[in-house]
Structure formats: C-alpha cells, structure tokens
Image (cartoon, rainbow over all chains, first blue to last red; front, side):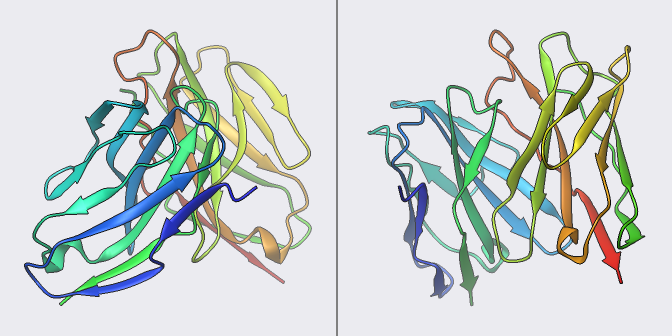
Length: 113
Length: 114
C-alpha cells in the first residue's frame, strides 16, 4: 500500500517556467489538498478538493492551479514560476472532508531561480 | 474558521511529561480539535483528535475543558525522538462552511534534551 505519492522529490526551475507537481493516493480518499512549507512559516494551505470535480482555494492560492478529474490524482500546476514559490510542497489525502485524519506525502522540494 | 494560538517553541528533558496548550476561542459547535506531529523533512502525521473532555491513545492524551476554548496535548515521558513540530488544528465537521479548509499554522517546535 503506497499511500500518498508525490513526484518529483526535487525540482529546480527558472523564473517563468511552468511545471506540474504530481500527487496520487491509492486509499480511495475523497479529500486531497496541497500545502507549502517555508522556513518558520509552518504549513499553508494552497488548494483542496473534497471530491472529483470539486476544488476550492486555501490560504495562498495565487500562482497555482489545480484540477481533480479522478479520485486518485490531484496535480498542482505552476503556470509561470516565481522565486517566491521556492518552498517544500506537501500533498495530503483523507476520508470525506479530511477532518478526521490526513495522510501526507513525503514532499517535493522546489527551487525557482 | 476558528484561529488557533500555540507557543512557538518549548524545551523539555528526556523522561518528562510535556504539555502543549492551544487556544481556539472561536471554536464552533461542529468543530473538532486535531493534533499532528512533524519531523524534519517529513510530512505531518496525525496524533490525536477530540471533541470534549479527555481522549487517550498509545501516543498522547488530549484534554479539552468544557468550554472547548483551549486544548492541551500531553506527551508522557518524552524521549529525544519526540523532538518535532506539533500542530493544533480546529477541523470542521459536516455541514460547516469551512469543511475541508484545514489550517495548520506555525505549530510548536518541541526540543527534547538529554
């Protein structure tokens, strides 16, 4: 049982480039979300989804797009990367609305030069 | 959405009991209190969740007073491996407009010393 899988683990981008951070879960969880973590800032919610076809904004959604076409996958897109998006990104999943318990991936470390 | 406030950092020694308090003055009737633990370079891990009074599992205890405006995570006899960041969340149950919006905040960095 793989749980929550994030790819890639590390990525370096140039300013203005686009990329997609992948997140997949094999637990049939309805809820999935993306967080970013910066030094001394804790975890900040970017976007979340309570089911396929449903997404909503978190605390810091600007510069990021998401879609949820399947229950298993919740990709995070950076359309035009900026140095301010340098961070560690975590994907999480959970049953229903996620309020009972979240399961996290191992993170993607992104650097934007 | 209820805002949580917890200490930025705490120090302890091996073998001591550690209590981390979180305040959530605006908690709503449908809200639960959930705690997570995060080690460096890892995603957070669920520790415990409660609604009121006391909840205990193999890792920790959670104390919630009757007014539910605060909660205390208790870690018995900590070891060096308990050094981590601990997050207190207010999580909304079904029917809330904040359902799914899980805010972690900065957390409390616990340093356990030998």
